[in-house]
Image (tube, rainbow, N blue to C red):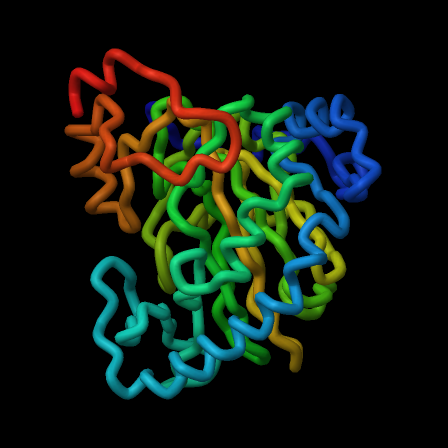
Length: 311
């Protein structure tokens, strides 16, 4: 997929309130949810991940304590500015509001680390909803992610599109972000730009903290905040613009994220900075190989001649 320079000034979001794409687990009208997802590029499912929160919070706190103890041994992050990585894989950023302080960006907590995380990946109701959105044959894209905003920190997650990090041939990756604690306007809720998935991939800049950013502040004016309770989940398209402000409250804001895709889709570019993105665009991957297989969580992996011939 080609990228383009897009200005938010010519873009009108498809919704101005989360109420336009808000549903409740156990009561979801699947047809209405699917229509909302197609239009807005995101849906909120209240309570979808509630059964997994307590166990995941326990594991998050254990990994947080471990990573903080390892911080003196951290090395400069390979692909991110102003960041270091601890030996256990947790990413820390320099906090611009407190010089010399390093704060967590992403805990190394996923289904390879936590049994509770693995259980959350195969939530039957979640997989039923995903089947309506991306089809019956569903595989994981990687093993999950835990973004952990510590209290009173000056590090936002800039608005961005996931697909600019990991572009796919069919652009089917679908993220499921669940709140592990109650989230309000004080402790950095997720923001999404409704309808922005229809724009395709937009050219990003390097973020000053980690990864990519859409730095035009007008994008924030087009974004809708999503407050919620622990266990509420946001399902969104790989091209939906999203992000979150810094957490100025005295409460943490951890989230756990899973990503799913069609079993016949594959990653053509997987990068975390502009220089690598520019190089990868010159020679993208053109066929799926077994190296890019994910765990099948619904359906089966069907034979694809173009893949088999290139494996």
